[in-house]
Length: 286
Ligand code: ASP
Image 1 (cartoon, protein in one colour):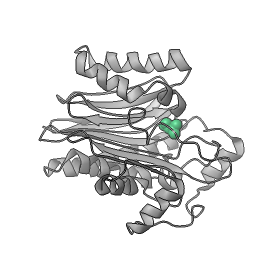
Image 2 (cartoon, helix red, strand yellow; image 1 turned 90 degrees about the vertical axis):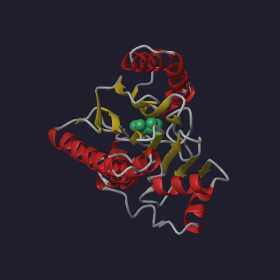
Image 3 (cartoon, helix red, strand yellow; image 1 turned 135 degrees about the vertical axis):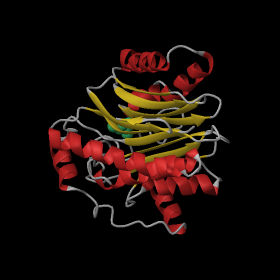
Image 4 (cartoon, helix red, strand yellow; image 1 turned 30 degrees about the horizontal axis):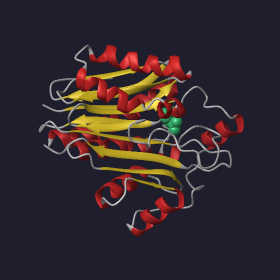
């Protein structure tokens, strides 16, 4: 039995067009990830496959749709991790890649380091033959408009996926364009294992979205997975309790998707909305 959930970010998804684009984008990610799991592939390959179309969909804050920093550059963060052996790869403040999750996966496969940032991440991508273009080539008019207004227009749209494969291994991938108008050099929670992204076969896998600084300060993903190892309470209640704890202690809001080592799924948010789509061998939903 396999399980998969994808998210398209926590925030407020205003307008029917925007909501429809989010739903369609999430469906594309779900279908790509599920195809891997259905064919008996690994959770790691499934979350990688799921995040690629999510990065490519312009409605989300990842890849070409990324939010811009204060200088107008789309510096992106992404991470991918296997719960089976705790192998992980992440990139931070990477410019010029249309698919940062591919660079994160290459960091994982390389195995020497876990997190590469900025120029070093770009150099690594080039060395691995992963395409990097003019960082400004992908910038969308919507992203420019959001920077001009310095607000996220109610919707952030980081993307992520968690999966458990038929062998019972879990994995996670998260990719984001960060927060609009952020300082140059700012790194969020998504590429930091234990903050916005974490997978461990002992407990499960989690991908968070929302106020990155809040998830960094509370080590959100690590706290949640440690609690899941001990706490056999209702998964959704535990998740919401941890999200509310982040809100209470830091004022930061967001959401997360989780799959547990024993195959339970949950998602939740303290923001108005969060796009989610999920599938198991037996059923699917959004
Ligand atoms: N958590 C991401 C960051 O702070 C943004 C988001 O999920 O909306 O970089």
